[in-house]
Image 1 (cartoon, helix red, strand yellow):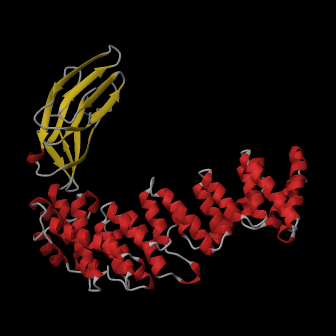
Image 2 (cartoon, rainbow, N blue to C red; image 1 turned 90 degrees about the horizontal axis):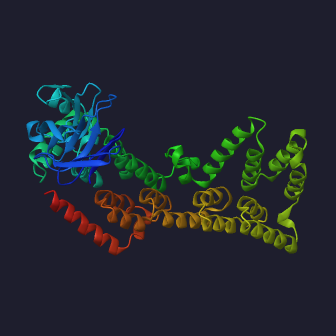
Image 3 (cartoon, helix red, strand yellow; image 1 turned 90 degrees about the vertical axis):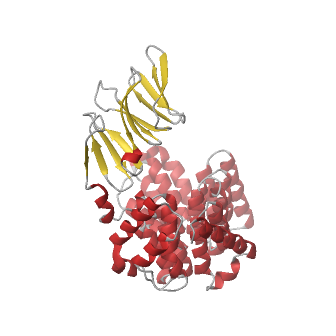
Length: 466
């Protein structure tokens, strides 16, 4: 089964052999038939109009319209009739099929695919630069061609130079023609704007041009690692705040907490979280003030005793207390953690400067991001890096792209290169090595990784005839 759609009591689906099936859930009957000569059914959609069960199907070699009750193909369109691939399709309430094709056009047909209205048809490819409609192989090829000269500190190539090189590549004629039209949309002035003082910066600009958001983030992290800005500021967006330097991360978190505290009265649970956050940020005095303020509020009479004890505990100077006192606090903290009161146990450990132990407990319970947060606000750079490295190892099994960003932040260049090669990002790995080699970190990439990279680059060039 390769596609499925459901409307009211009717379920329709298609398979990789091009078979179209309808299953009536009310009568519990199903019927199938060989669809047409258009191959695998990749997508099926019902007409959105109530009571209309017409189905539009996207197939390997075209599109077709169906009556699912009678299993009749009402009309069909072959892809060779329009000379390009279909990216997506939809069926309007009026029963009109709309096809989005790789030239950036929305093609509106009548129900029989006999008449066509389109937004300037293929002419749009020569006016609108839209790399998201390119195939994966085309994107890789253009990226490599754009950056090959840049990697050797040469000016970006002209449009005609790129088009000429694409003409010698092994991609098919249609893709070559489309890419040529798309690149001419840019013009040489825009390509010359890709020039930058650093290789990582140029790679980031090219990623922005091609709409590759993950690569934009990756090269931003690399640029921050290799060319840090002054005053611990970064080029990264706030959504990647875990990759900020610790000093800036603390400032951002303190500003966010201060803003929340300035809003005034909060519920019991939020106040408890505020107190814990203040303790973890090392602001015990502010936490005591917050607890005492709640103790004075008659609406929170049921928490006066507990809040008073917490305030007394926080007011004590545990950094200069006896070893026996510190052992007692650590024992209570571990007992609370074992009993499920993880947050309370964590901030108790932080009172006696056991933040590293607290991070380990958080990681052992699966609170990876919380452990990184605590490491960023409470540990020195070396121990924070240890916590983040374990987080990156954990991410490598569930989120490779984020793991790569964390490893790049930690300057683990050899691990980054190997992981990029594992996921087929040969061009990115090659450019990263070119960016890192002139820096003091250049020797951190192992010879085995470099040999593997060279083989991958040669295979890439051979595949595309470069």
